[in-house]
Length: 238
Image 1 (cartoon, rainbow, N blue to C red):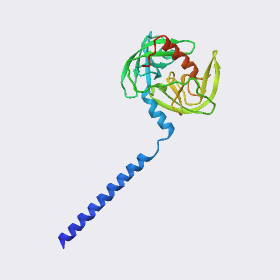
Image 2: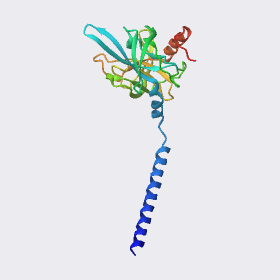
Image 3: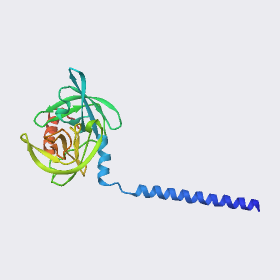
Image 4: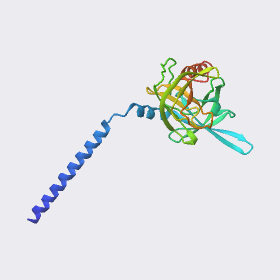
């Protein structure tokens, strides 16, 4: 009788183990079948092509670092950012989301558009693409990535608040995603993953902190700048 009871117990234990294994497998299958929402998909695709930029600034008190962001616009390490992020230096430190660091060299800039193209040795199978004729409308969802207050690869979301906002003689894109010092130069993507802007500044007449009024160099200006870079050999896409 003892042997019979023992075999019964073993059988029950085996059955429970089998049920547990089936349950775990079912759980994994269920989780893997949950669709990733569009917003998360865009973020996960664009984080690897976004970089943090640190620019050394020589002062009377020694070297200080200006922080901003940028985005890869070619497979061979060309990075688009804002001119004011790298102003005052010919080189900068580039950091990827994986923690790798590279030295960046300022290839060319546009004072009018506040844009800069930075050369680096980064290689990437993907990069940001700009469609010059994307339809931009108030209310469209957007995602920005930057380094506010040094918090690298921070993702914020919002909507386009206004298009063709005239500031200083050329049009800017206005959006309401949180924008703070360190966001400058970071990409603005639409929900299709297209690069539609480069964060230029926040607008707050009182203090330099988020007010829900962000401004970005819009896609037509970016396309013109990159076309100039390609024409003059600063940007090579093959």
